Length: 399
Image 1 (spheres, rainbow, N blue to C red):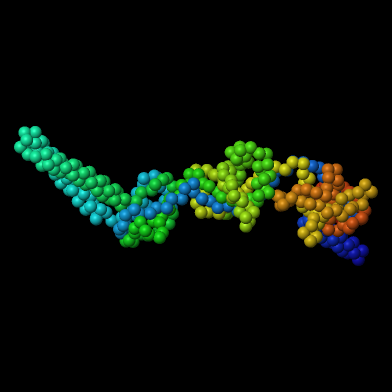
Image 2: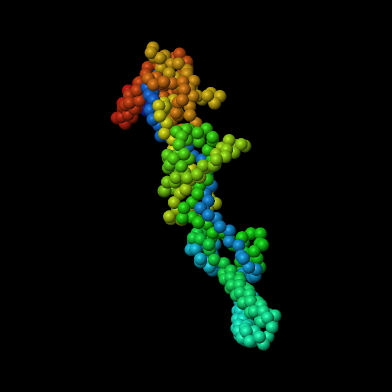
C-alpha cells in the first residue's frame, strides 16, 4: 500500500515538472532550445524584401475656400448646417436684403429718369438741327443741344451701371457656395452683424472629392527614389502607390498617388515636403485630419533575419554565427531602419551562406559549442513532446 502511494506521488511530481517545462516551452517557443545543447539555426541568403515605412501626414481638401461676405448687414437666415455637403451655387447664408432692395428700386428709378431725359434731349437736338440748317439759330446754340444729348446718354449709362451694382449687392446678400464641398464651422449665426472686413470667414467650403495628403521624407530617402533620373513628371509616375493609415489605425481602402514634391529642402529639418492625392468617393476623409502615409519599399539583395535571433547591447545588434566546428561566434551586424516588427534587414556583418542561431540566443556565449538543428526539427521535437505529454509518456516527453 505504501509502495503504491510512493509511486503515485512520484507520478504526480513528474507530471507537475513536465507541465511546468511544457508551459515554459509553449509560452516561448521562439526563446527555448529543445535539448541541453540543441539550438535552431538558419542559413541566411540574400533576397528581395518588400517593406513599408510610414510618415505623419496632414489631410487637406484640394481647395479650402474661405467664405466671406461682400456686403454688410445682419445674418437673417442659415440655409445649411455645419458639416453639410453642398453643391456649387447652393445658398449658405442670407444677409438682410432690405436696404439693398431699396437701392435696386432707387437705381431702377434713376435709369428710367435718365431714359426720359435722353429722349427729351434727342428731340431737342433734332429740332435744333432743323433750325440751324435754316440759319435761324447760331452754331453755338445747336452745339449746346448736341452736348446736352451726349450728357444725357452718359447719365443713362451711369444710371444703368449703378443699377447693375445695386442688383449685384442684392445678389451678394445670398451668400452661395463657390464650389462643391463640405461646410466647415459657423463662427457667425443669425443676428450677427457681418461685413467684408470681418476677421474670421463665415465658414469654409472644402472640396473633398479628392484630398491632398501632405507629408515629409528626408533628403536621402528622396534621393533613393529619384536617383534613376528623368524629368520630375517621369519620376513622379515611377513612384509607387501609397496607402493611408487613419487615426483609428485602419487602412484606407483606396490607394493614393504622389503628385507633387517640393523643390526646396527645409534647412532646419533636412526634409522635403511631398503631396499625395487620394480619392474620397465615400466622404470618409475630412480636410484638417491627421493620418500616416504608408510608403512601400522594395529592397534587392538584402539579408533578412528574425528579430529574436539578435542580441542588443548599447544600441548595437549582434548575432551568433555558427562556425564549421559548430562553435558560435559573437558577431556585430548592421541593420536598416526599415522593419516589419518581426524581421531585420541586415545591411552588413552577414553574407549569403552564413548560419546563425535563431532561438535561445540569450543563453549562448562566444565560442560555445552547440548541436545545430533546423527549424523543422525543432518544431517536430516540440510536437512530439506535446504528443508524449498527452499520452502520459512523461518520462520521455522532455528528454
